[in-house]
Structure formats: structure tokens, C-alpha cells
Image (tube, rainbow over all chains, first blue to last red; front, side):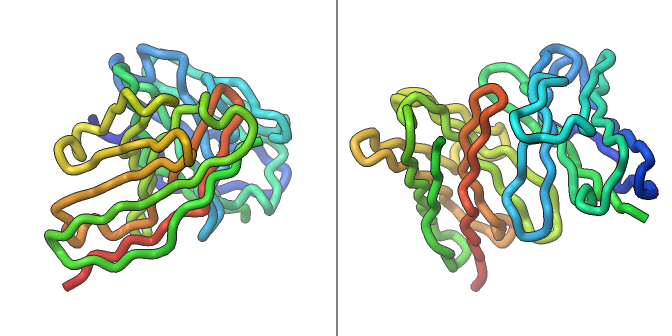
Length: 110
Length: 116
């Protein structure tokens, strides 16, 4: 199972919106509505930001939103803030109770 | 609320095996699947495998098939991950985690270093 493809880096100014893509195949992202997004700050465990493509866990800011079209999922961060600077990973169910992560995207707030 | 506490750092020689533990506690902890993820230095997250609540069913990423074994001791609510035939590329931080829909709990991570 190959890793899902994400851009290596995305940047934006405070207050702007950015979108991170996550491209898989018809066997993972395209096949199931089980795409999650994680935020990871250096030296910390990942934090779940979005599950089931667009579902936001309790406590996660509504500035974070998820979507999916065909084999590509997306995470949009609106009203970018300095604390959003982190690494972001997507994850998708691949069937038979297995999952795969994306390659990761470094978000920089300019 | 579920708490996951992982065992301490390990240093192993190539070819050896390592067994990591993940102590689970909290409400209905025995109802949760536990999965393992690793992260090599400066690299991304990599899904390793998952074990069901009763410990009777496991799934592994194809890359680790035959080298990793997940087990679960229900009475002590401890989940174990054993990785064999270690090589330098297995040097990483290993996380245990549990998720059910929008609820997500992660351990603090265990550093495994493989070096001769």
C-alpha cells in the first residue's frame, strides 16, 4: 500500500485560507468515506482534526474543514493563525481493517 | 476518557526483537481497537497494525507482515507490539492510539533505536 500523496509544504499569511490536498486511489480515498486529518507539532503525538472526511471532533476549531472529491481529499484551514503552523497528515481506510497515511504537509504561517 | 501510557525507550542491535507496551485505562477501554503508528526521524507517519478489543483479531500493514505481532492482555489492559528482525530503518518513535469516530487518544510515544 503506497502512501497517499500530499504537497510537501503549504504556506499562508495570518487570516488567509489554505487547502492541503491528499491524493489516493479508487482503492482507498475514492472507495471509502473514512479519511482523517491529523495535526502534529514537533515532538508531540498527532492530534485528530477531522474524521470521516468532514467530521470535526469536539474541541477542534471550526476553522478546520474537510472535503473529498473522487480520489482526492482536502483539508482547508481558514483564518490561518500562528498556532496552525505544524505538520498535517491525512489517513484513509484501505479495506480489510487497514489504513494508510499521507506523506505529510508542513504548514508555515508567514 | 481513555489514557494510553507507553513503555520507555529501547536500544536494540540489528537482528534483535523489541516488545513495546501500551497500558490502557479509562472508561470502556476494553471496547476500543488499538492501533500502532511509527515515525522515523524527520519522516512521516506510518501505519503499522491494529488489534481488536478482545485481542482475537489483528491486521498489519503489508510492509510489516511476518515481522510484527500485536497482542492484548485484557485483564491488565495492556497491548503489546513486538517487532522482530530489527534493522536500522526501524529506528523510530512508535505510538499506540485508539479512535472511535471523532474520539481519539494517543500514547506519548516510545523511541526505538536500532544500532550496532
